[in-house]
Image (cartoon, rainbow, N blue to C red; front, top):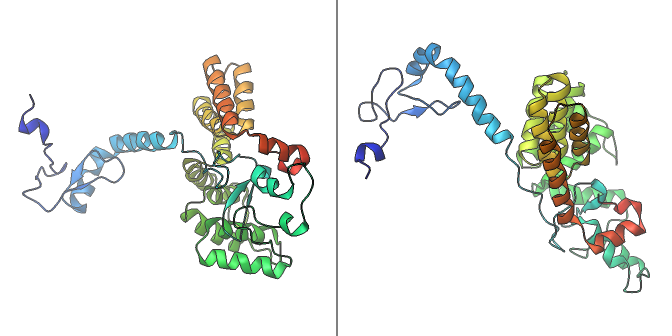
Length: 310
């Protein structure tokens, strides 16, 4: 049977030894969470003794978060199946802000005999039934409304338009980064990946590999499989950390990134990964395929290559 002393952890300042009752409320080291201090002065005074252990524990905590399998992407709001990873496997709708799978986008365009329905129905949103815009001005107005509603995907897409100078938006890398940051802060992982790419390639900003990796990590932890794959490449090619690279590839393979599966296969053939690593990645990728496959999506892909979803 435990005692009160065992049940209640005693908190003391790591520098001066004062407890909660002798000082103001103690605050934990924000990096390692292992020790507490009365105030900033005590934290600074204790830094020489604490620095090495702090960095080690902070790195461990970071890796625990980094290498955790993120939750899968949201399901299609119509068929309730997991959305595929490939861009051709889904479509964002600026009318309602929904992301709909290729099968559900395609299905309303044909009757039960496979014949095309009237042109209006072909152009209706499969979710909200609003007809898609016929002019660029109408399309931009919809995006403006979605951005005012803090729609992260709309904000991100406009950032892409600024980057490429498309759809009436002037090419402006700085503006693109501004929109990427907004979308990332609202939870859209792909936006952080594009910021990482900008720093990696020196696109509109000074090239900075450390910042590129930081933003790739933010995107990967939010579930962006391509950013995760990029981290695997960085670990393998730039830093020579094959074990860390394999961990990234296994996670992104589970999220449907086929290139990561191929990378593990290649690494395995060269002796830098184990058979167990490759087997785990292969099974994970197969699990992903089972979750996204459907007859409706297969029919859509058979009609048009633009509906391919794996």
